[in-house]
Length: 526
Image 1 (tube, rainbow, N blue to C red):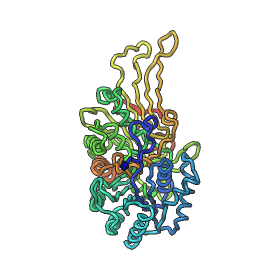
Image 2: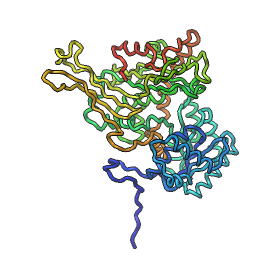
Image 3: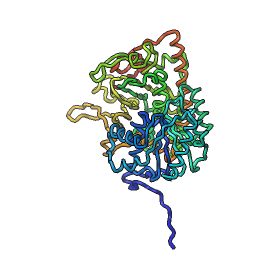
Image 4: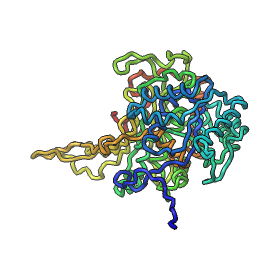
């Protein structure tokens, strides 16, 4: 009698399509989205789950349970999610038949996670879904709520028996996804971690930072460590300085109360931009094991030169946008936004001069800036190399000689990589012209790039935390940011910030230009 052999459920096995690594379906699970009536679920989470379903990456047995206080039936929830998908997921081809099959796994409960009896109802519902959809008792809890609800929700899940510690590779498993911000200071972050670790082991915790799910961000490691032409030059001997820019034309929109508590330093710098700094600056990991990668990120962030209170004014610039013009339309200043104090000292722009004190980066400044209501929406990393050591073309170019080479990694809106280099212009005379060698994801591969949330949700289903922030990484980021925030708080007591100090539609305050000019550089023209 022949013996059957179990084979892995592999999708897209053709190496010409997927490369060396193949994708496979996740194990059966039920995902509980706490705060399912919010914008995040409508704009990001459900479209990502549906995209994974279309790619055949979800298991045959899965369920999604939405929770919020708004009364709603299963059918009403499904209709709401379908309408949101068609409204926001413009890059997805909506297929009614596929949606109908997918929607059969969507459920909803009106529940207040602050009430234990409601969580008991959730537990009962998950038991029903386990029987109906064969979810094996594997649960992912996505906290799409106000940060103040994280700790009580986690404690409530534990009390209801839904959240327990488990060992790696143990089944069934509970996992939890936490949205930023991870606290609002080092102390509050440590308190949140303590509450989480009372119920979950670290390998069960997925602190989501959607920047790490972007294709170009993931490509930084491949660019650096898979190409022999770049890594030997990735150090102080050949790199002059690094510029990282995150600019948005949008203002705070309807997030006034949140932004008043957060500000740009907490909202963007402590998480997204510190992640980019770590990817640019990290040493090669010993393997692609997820902990090896995260170890190197933490190591390089520990090497950041902390900015003492008396040094903040020389190394950090803060700004707040005033009225101005964006795309030909007049827009209000930050203090005129809804539910924002007319005397607010909250920063909407930050520029920081940073140094990584290790052998690779000794003396190389990192200039990192982020702001709202800027002239253009763009996020990029620019590596500026040192100029050629011998001014061979002085007679052609004059005393200034050659411009430096730049390697630019554009993260959004158009993901790609560009290398700027000098070439001889055709003709009898020796004329030098600068050209860019451009790689664009859309043009190069001719396929749709998955959204950041697709990649991150899929990794969580597989139990791979590589692209999620580990607790010690969060702590070391807060340890760098905390002294800056404390210094600003003290300054505000005696000397109010002179806000607004840049017009909407500009590239930020003049002090930002002075910051980078103090080292003999200037911001790139974007």
